Image 1 (cartoon, rainbow, N blue to C red):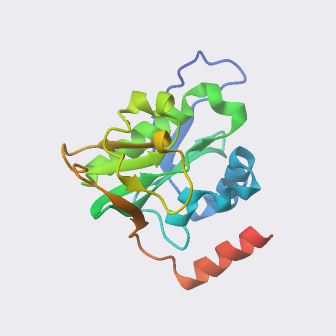
Image 2: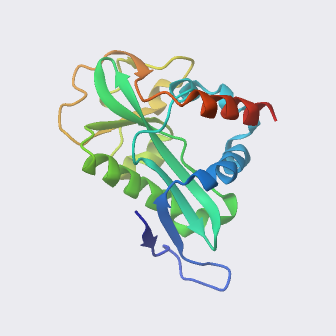
Length: 195
């Protein structure tokens, strides 16, 4: 699944097109370095990380943006139960700071949401800035009674429904439901964090 995106700015000698494709095993080290650069090495302590620890991303919903052979963006979605309703949690979404004006983040979001919808998922939840994510259809309208396993700012818990009413009445804790990582991969992830 590779899609070429036309940047939202005029190309110059310093700007090159990028491709969005399914995440590959070879992307892991670059993805982790990008996430550390964007969110800091303490990113593993964040509330939404509790929904990802020891879990694999939802099938087919881990995407990488590549520019001139280098990973410059990433997004992943994870299976959860949102107060008993099946949903996905999106995150983290990260773009190399040197490439932030190329439209990579928006392209990753659009492709991730389209892939989630095509795979039959009903809703996506995220923790993020409402003004940024509103343009993709996210709002706090259906998340007021949902909780995360740690501290969070209520106005940053946002959702989009692909099937109207899929989050109606959703209340309670958002918990992970996705496949567990293979034990070998979990050990490797812990070692990478300790390094």
